[in-house]
Figure 1 (spheres, rainbow, N blue to C red):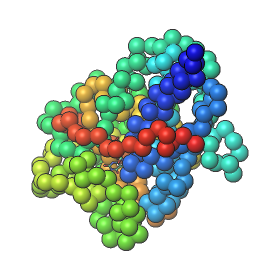
Figure 2 (spheres, rainbow, N blue to C red; figure 1 turned 180 degrees about the vertical axis):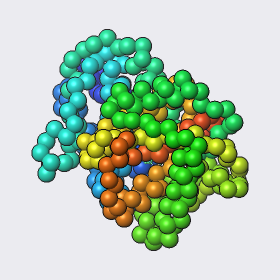
Figure 3 (cartoon, protein in one colour; figure 1 turned 30 degrees about the vertical axis):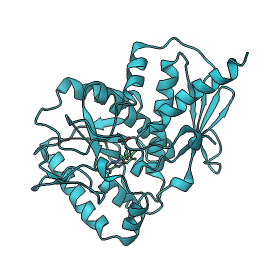
Figure 4 (tube, helix red, strand yellow; figure 1 turned 90 degrees about the vertical axis):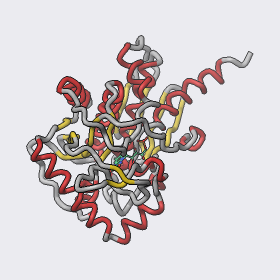
Length: 308
Ligand SMILES: Cc1cc2nc3c(=O)[nH]c(=O)nc-3n(C[C@H](O)[C@H](O)[C@H](O)COP(=O)(O)O)c2cc1C
């Protein structure tokens, strides 16, 4: 009877399918996985790195951290207790970003099953959001989700949000004049059907990747949030990615959509601007939250392609 081998393969496939659904910068999916017995290694796929807009590899690590969170939650939902070591090897051997030992068992919690169920429903939503405000209780849940993963979710006040929108617009203008950036963007372009419409009027809280379809008016006062970490090194970026995905899955469970405005952060990385340690940490993601229509999924690579 050939039962065990295919069953094990199926269990791993479930984990990797979940990991591969994570958000990633420009949908580059810059990850690979090496499976040995009950250990899964998360590897950076440097062939899918964006050297122009992500010279430090920060966004690559954040993306891989998000994939790691999905792997962890899929393992928890299937009755495993993943033991994770981030950057387990010497810094020179930076290919292995995390080693996950799945040999320990622990009954799945309702919370793990609920968040696991949100993985296929989460998506970046670049459509206009409706007028409903995200309730304080939901925002508090999102802040907790970030804190559990050792990051912070800051919620700027109205003035802070207006400033962020201005920074995003200025950064976008500067990026639009950068030939190397535009070339890189063109080689990883997102499909137009996930890019949402162009904005009518002044308020444009969605990053323009160059293929927006149609026009619409966006919500006048977007609810923004900034995910920060204490440090600004690969370990912090992996934590930011895990925190990001946890925040997004909790948001999805509350029916809240998200998109991102990371232009100012990309520009900071590209210009190698020093980012003096702010009292409240280093910004890793600028997030817009709200209630949007359902939107199509961005494509993913099959599991066979992400297995090392
Ligand atoms: C580190 C990182 C940075 C991102 N930056 C942006 C951004 O600035 N603007 C945006 O609209 N989406 C951004 N995204 C979202 C990705 O484009 C998105 O996750 C990817 O296209 C896959 O689509 P999905 O999230 O719907 O699954 C970012 C995602 C990550 C992980």
